[in-house]
Length: 398
Image 1 (cartoon, one colour):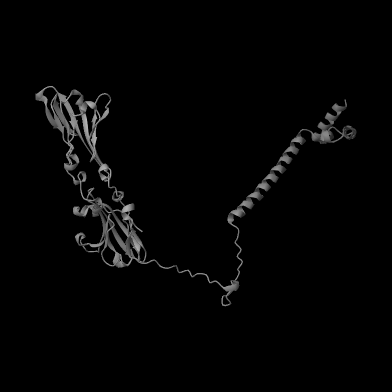
Image 2 (cartoon, one colour):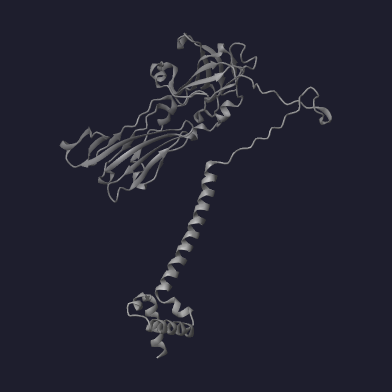
């Protein structure tokens, strides 16, 4: 399903049809069920016969000293007397008693004093309709009649009032919201429209009308056939979503949800472009057959078992080769170490420590006796190594 906002719909829509607050494209396969969401908590209908308590007006004063303190001047609700919070202001500061009938909530200040200087705020609250409005007016006090004036400083209106005179701070709202109107259940309406491709918005077909009083009007056989439906408790939950079952190509087009609350001044519209695609293909995998007593079907050939030997990976061969080479190098290192140690011990006179001394003495005497009879040149034939060995033995004997 593909959803994305389309801002161009809101730009091209007619203002009399309501403000477009949502626009979506929805693509669904044929035969499926579509849900076009339309929610608004402001359209939840609560049967409160004491609706006058839902409206209130109050004037506040913000003084520059000390430290921008806020002071409640007065407040009033329909059917109740206005309440003045400062005893000094009683009879001096007031608003008309007919404020909620004619929409004039202006504040009158008689005998203006220096303590009246500051920023006044007119606050209008309608809790049922969730509307809050405020108007700010700045009051400055002067002792010169020439300086008395009224101007706008870019953010609020400024009144420069002569000390001891009277001033009226305007706060007027003529909307029917702030005055007695018809029953709210007759003012809340929700309806769905269907616009086939190529049809203008003002020529759209009406699908259903819903009223907060419980009245319902269906247009065409679609709702009677339960192909389209809206929840019965729509105004209780604020959910006016449209349900469409068994989608067909003829259902594609623009669907718009209109929410009107004439008492609260609410006019909203939500648009959905529904596109019906091809139906989903059924799963081609056949379901397994179940046989009684777990007996196999004789027509089914038993599976053949084939043993497959997977050769080892190349990395396994390299690993074993590495182990072999490491062992061979260790053995070679040990042999070389033994050879080097043997040569070093030979150079230090290993025959002297391994051959007995008496055997060397007898051997040297025999050589001496044989050579003494020979000529001097024959003595040179004696091994130099033997001469050194004899000399070392003779020194040892001496």
